[in-house]
Structure formats: structure tokens, C-alpha cells
Length: 435
Image 1: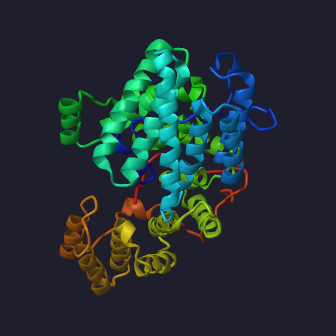
Image 2: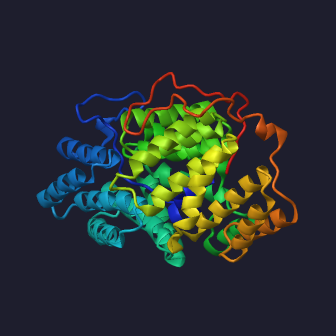
Image 3: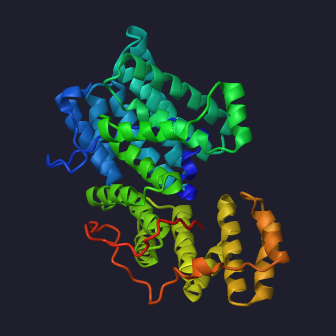
């Protein structure tokens, strides 16, 4: 599950705080997504326009979102709201499509403008809620982009700034509980760092994580936040699946998100992975197959996003015992090598080598492991490859017990289709199985 949270490490997303209001465009409020207008720091008119933009963003309707955000900015150029919403439209596109660096550049242009406007307002009133919110949100988004762009030092510094503004927002305006999204992300993901990284963070930055507190803060933002309920629920689902063992709750959260935003392939892919985590390989494969098909023609998905989806499909084929379906996908990933995503080539070679071992094709397996040794090390990939060269990869009897006994093709929804409320899971023991 950590693979899905690659952009949510301490330096990349410890202080994410975007303005995600969730209210249906027709005024209907989906279950669990209620919004308390009486507590909003925005005027009712501005709030309605923000809702329109964000619903477009979450529906992958980025051109419509940008037009609506431009109108907000034009109506009040001194208000950071329009600039932040424009940054949001480019942020979502950029994280899904790394093939277009101009998207990241446009994001940075608008987020810098957001920060400048918010700082100007803060000079007039150091307790201004909107300024503190957008400064925390803006620096948080920027920290993620810095991490994705390889600017690790800048990402850490920006994260610290974001956290400071969110703490101030929490202190001066405790009724605006959106700050708990960013604070919760920091506490949760910092607690998942290796022990030496946690010590360095504490010594150098005076910061430390706390998993239980982080989950509690995310839950608070998910239920009480004015603007951050969607993303709080996304990260809650990650936490529920990854460390908390709360699988049914995670499925419920992700089904709700997919029902509300069926065109959002990010949410759809997370639901597919949730099914996989519960050994419901039939539904996971069905959904990932549809996601690969949809991603091929989705403008918001770049090459890396498409290949990552294909890799997860192949990996799910493998754990489901469908080796002959996995191999052609992995062959294509290895052949279509993207130097900017070398980790994906490494993972594909290791996975293909494992399948060759499982099929008794030892020479082919060793050849794949040896290729891994010539590439950059990714989370101990070279050590794994050396281990498999010494002793063939083997799957345990417990893992084999979850193999599909029939051709894949579950009842999970197709990408762009509503999630059926009775979608089932074949897993019953709550165990996890990561790639």
C-alpha cells in the first residue's frame, strides 16, 4: 500500500492541505460528505464557486475547473482563492502526468502567487484565517511538488513552513479543523520513517511523528474539516489498509469516493488495490484491467501513471496465480524502458524473475535478477536480486491458497462507472499482501 502513498512521504506530503469542499453540483449532499456552511470562512457566493471548481477537479474535468477558477481570480485579484484553485488544477494534472513539465511550471506560478497574496493579507491581520489556510495549503502542495521534482532539501524546508502555518491556524481558529489534515499526514507518515530518519527529524527539525495521533487527526479532518474531507479520506484509507487493519472501513471510504467521483482514476485505482489487499483478486483484476483500458485514452494520465497501473495489474495477476497473464504485461514494461522511472523497470524485472522461478524457468529468472544488479538500487532491490540468484523465489502455501480457482473477472465497477453497493470481497482473514 505504501506504493500508492509514494507522494505522501514526510518530505513530499507531510503537510498537504488543499481546499477540497465536497458538495454535489446539484446541491445534493452525498452521505458522509456534509458541509457546514455556517462555519465556512468564505461568503456563500464564493463558497458555491469554489465547490464548482473542486468538483470539476475531482472529476478530472480540468479545463472546466481552470475556467471557473479564472473567473474567481478575475472577480477579486487580491484574494488568494482563485490563484490557489488554479494551482490545484495544475497540481492534479502534474502529479498524474510527469511527461509534461509545463504542468508543474504552471502549478508553481500559481502557488507562488497564492503565497504572495496570502502573505500580503497576513501583514494586515496576523490572525486572518484564509491567509493562514492558504499559506499552509500552498506550502504543503509545493512541498509535494518539490519532492516529485527531486528537490528534497527544498521539500523539507517548505514542509516545515507549511506545518508552522497550520499550527497557527489551529491555534487561532480551532473551529476550522482542516489543519488536522496536514498535521495528521505529518504525524502518520513521519512515524513510518526508518528509525534513523525519525531521530534525525527530531534532532534537526524538532519534529517527530505519532501514528495513532496522525490517524486520529486525519479522522477529525475527514469528519469535521470544512475543505479537506476528500483528501483526508484518501489518506485515511491508506492508513486503514497499511497499518490499522481496518479493511472494511477502508473499502467503505473508497466506495463512497468512487460513487461521488466515478471519473477519478486515482480513487478508482485505490479501490482496486483495497480489494487486492483483502485477497479479492477477482475484483482487483477486473478493475485494474478497466483502468488500463481507460488510462490509455485519459489525457490526465501520463506514461508513468499508465505504466504504474499496468505494473499493479501484472503484480496482481502474479499473486492470483495467473502467471501467463502477468508475463506479457511485464515484458512490455521492461521493453518500454523509461529512464525517468527506473524504479518501475527494476520492480518489473524482479516480478518477472519471480514468475519465471515459479514456472521453473530458472535461467530466465537469473537473467532478470542480474539485470536488476545493473540498475539503480530501489528500496533494497539489489539485495533482493542477489538473494534470488542464490536461492530461487518461492511462494508460500498460504499465499497459494488465495490463487483464483477461476478466470479473473470480478464484480468491481468499470472506471467511470458508479461503485455497486454490494461489491463483494472473497478475502475473509483481513490479511495483507503487498507487491
